[in-house]
Image 1: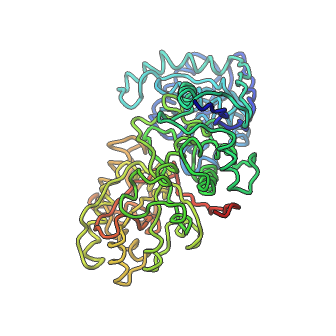
Image 2 (image 1 turned 135 degrees about the vertical axis):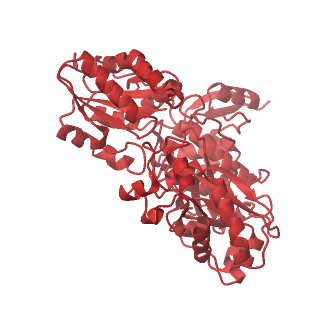
Image 3 (image 1 turned 120 degrees about the horizontal axis):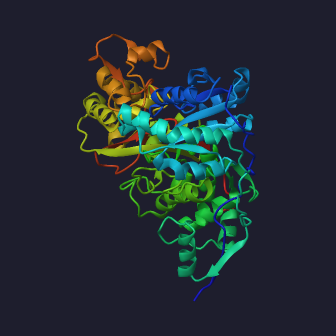
Length: 101
Length: 459
């Protein structure tokens, strides 16, 4: 019987794990932006979240997904390249990003 | 959506990503590839598209909301990425059957037996490239692994390719790594599949079939190169069913296709690769992702005019929701592919028609009522939210002016923005009057062509 010494068929990852952004202990008084891929009923879901979050947490403000453009589609690369700068310009503290369905 | 979250996290802004229940596994695997294994998601139960407004409200308020708040206020560890073997490290020794069992258990195989990737077999492939084995064409999402020459050789061996196919395999890997292709979308739910088209003298030199049964398995070059693409997507890009590959149905890989270069030369038509910027006569591959295809049988006519309506009808009928890639999700990116058998291409060319003239004529005839187009976009689907008309989308500059010429819902509109978006290739049974049409996946697998670099080995 032949024996085969075989190598791994995958390839090295090009990115090391990176830390997530630090979280606040509370969302009170924070500015939350919605990012949307313009699919799967985000235009209905984000208003529900906005209403429910405002009912529970004082001092929140929100930035519409319209301030960024779609995060999925022909303009995705352009939107994501400029996202950090845009979030900074708008004074955003946290992001809710959808919809993965 | 997760890529947007990752970009925000890198900018120092905490995120919570919203995913439907069936996509939690994909999100987890994709997050790992983005370098953020702990990227947090909030789950929407079920799938949003089948829920009433009340059900959606209840699910978001009672289930998703708490997770969103927790995701934005909880500190997360950096996450652990498991250590990988080195690219040339021997990971297993055993018989043919044992190697195949080992690979199946680790999900490194497509389910058919693979050729064991031994160092000797890999070296035979590497001899057909001047590039360093560690050379990378770029990272492949979602796993963000490097598309190295070494990895191409290993997976080419496994797929049953011959060493001399290596230059073609390298060009495919280079195309997969090109951001224009959009490999990151290869696991989306429509489950489209990549088609490789080989052009240039190398096709016949390597034994690619470009005649009868051009899309059938049974020819080693066509079959194994097609299989290579799927295995490479699995092992290097990281698309695994039930995880990152969310094809609702999917299908087996597409056998690689070759154009009949002899007929193209005879009739003076440029090859498919020339439509994508590579000169005729140059060895090249073009990859594009197609949602499906269908045969157009027994085209009848002695002139191009007599054939046009049937071919245009086929172009229209093979599409549907895909027209969101003409207007909507990623406007102007739909690229259907029409295959003509040599006898059809010869008949059309004999009338003095160029490929461009044929494209123009097909563009004029391959049209559907505006109402039907709008149903695909936002009535039967919700792919373009807001039930917008084509005229709305023209006014928003999402659609080209040609879609807004008139207000009647019965007016006919084209299925692609520009005639040049209709791809045409010549292949198949030389003397049968059949054609074939592929529906395309738009920006989720945009046609991308690369030159095949010559092999340093003279065979």
